[in-house]
Image (cartoon, rainbow, N blue to C red; front, side, top):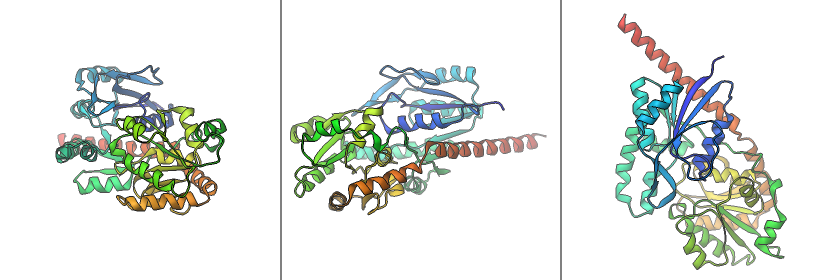
Length: 386
């Protein structure tokens, strides 16, 4: 059987540290190399990276107020040359920037079927940086981009519903999976807990993600402050970096700011905590939710995205209605007062049912359906020409 040649275009990929980059790597790794030959066209990595598959690097520029991400610049000539060598039969555009737009134009010219992905709520992020006025413009651009592809894959039904209501066509759900081998309760580190707690027997509340306005960081701090009234030995550990980190460090010197962690170090941070809180309202999915659950942590989050799909209140975590800050704090208190160990075991069991192999099989199904539609359209065109 010959391999299907798939070209994937993205503005972010490992060694970038974010959910889109990590999820895309996991998806690619789960595809059967006997069936699929993958080419990755991406922005040039800004730190040392040894490619695991064929990579074509393009120029990118830093996103304002989001310095750890890039926007890929238009690169029609680079993509054309790469495709002349590779001859892709299918194109998947993972991010909707100018680089992806270049690929979309060229694929349409060559009649190559294209699927796109919608991962990040750029239109929502804008309001957190005082640029709410561009929300409509951004959404209009995204709609035009995605509606020129054969279909758009999103990580949750909630996002799919929003896009359909916003007149995006052919939207389907492709959820994320989680690496249950890397993220595992056995990575719990007594040494790390002692570093956080000293010789005390307190509990650790963990947040993982960007320390930025769009992640609702003030609510993390407000929740921790409220819970300390009943449990003074509660320690807050925040993993990540971002524009609010210095402010948090100055105003809350007791908070442990662990910086960016990856791989086994990140897995140890998850597994060594007792409770995971994630109050973001801008997620299309929120992969950290699944990573925490796989690590044996009960989760407190708003009832949306990954938490809505996988967390059951009173079982493996607690959920609050979106935008209900007091409800989020109350949910955190209920979780802290519950049997965290038992809830953590249940969270791990939930995560074990969400493998990347299953997600990859769903992805392949979407590709096969689009190829069948393309073949049918070509047959109809040939009949009309006879």
